[in-house]
Length: 271
Length: 306
Image 1: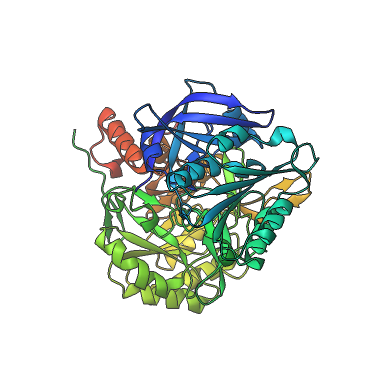
Image 2 (image 1 turned 45 degrees about the vertical axis):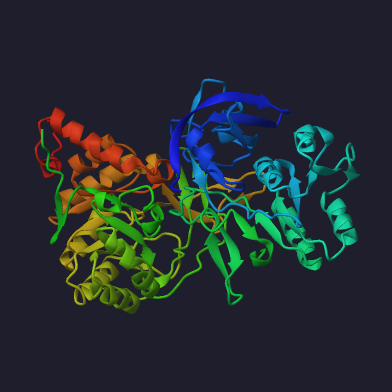
């Protein structure tokens, strides 16, 4: 479906911590069309500084009492002037939101399991994915890592939807002490080979690379949600490229806005 | 009031003066879902060499105040794949296609232009002698008057299509390059390509672009671009296609009053991909308000203070 551009009203802006917040935007047309893993481009100002829109994974697709999609939320991390404006947004403000854009995750159904791996703000595509997998009754796990326990959010939300949580913090204040790849690797080791699973991963690039490599070593397919600097989100500017192998195995730059942001882990070539 | 938006570039008549800027609109088809490509004056597609090119490592863009730097490195599918894979659909959609032609040698410019001249639906050639981001192509022709003359003359000999050299602003006197292009047989000139620029992350002390330098575009460059378009239009008789930071109908009008016959929009389409209809209706409203029947009446219509 063609993306649409909405002047979306901010319904809520919930601050989760000093660096993270969830912005809920009234965008019925986008909410109805979005599939997990897709993204939107949001204008943070009507002026020219910052000039460009910012890409965000759709975090949740929110529905009214009848189940009709009416809003989307995005999980935002404060990183610069653009995201600072979003952090300061209040209910009633309006933001231009263009979407849905990009290729979504492929959903796996039982008997396959879905293992989601998130690092920090890499949690962003996984609420919507969880809802879609729940509709298929696919067993799900979330391996979720952050700097500290105060950087882990929505744990109750995921547990309430039957997602098994495996947490890790770099300071050891919650879950495994260290990187999230440690509990993931331990779980992959003990998973019987005859039980199919797909890994879904989003987070900082070194983590994506490590998780895709673990998938390869353990013979498990992975779907990697990449995050690149984007100019337009529509394929016009060629700024958001990642290196991907074509059918012959030759690496090429492809636009992550059109060919991604979700790629098969085995196709990605890491620099 | 019925207003006439038609403009003429050489033998080419455009239904309005609005064109996509090369490198900002893919091959046009990326936007076919959301923009009626036949509603644009012309679709200027991404620069093409003879062969495919990978382009530069990311990061390829960075924002700067009211602008952005890019160093894409002319990633592209090459002229043969373009003709095979993109032209049929562009023709079907009724797009007026202007192909931006690149070369790393005189022969390559000539060869790519010759190939395109035989392709149904290619309306004109924009000769890219101004990309600031690659060493071996373009800019070496665009920064030297005799090379500009030489490459335009050579391409002129192999094509009857309207030929529009795209000029760089990274020279002392861009109008002298416009004149060299005119003397070599160009039907029009387009300007400005981006301004060579740089941004550094002071924490890492690394340039913000992998290519170190890039081209500045966006509203930040508009006043300089208007000045350069004005200077060129004063000096040459062929049409000038103006661009540089256009993001509203008033910006389009400013360029036309300065002397541009048509304009290109690039960076602003990243922010608002639906900008085309807004620009068109804004121009029409202005013309009705100011009692201007033909948009060409605005070209070079600047009033002086004294």
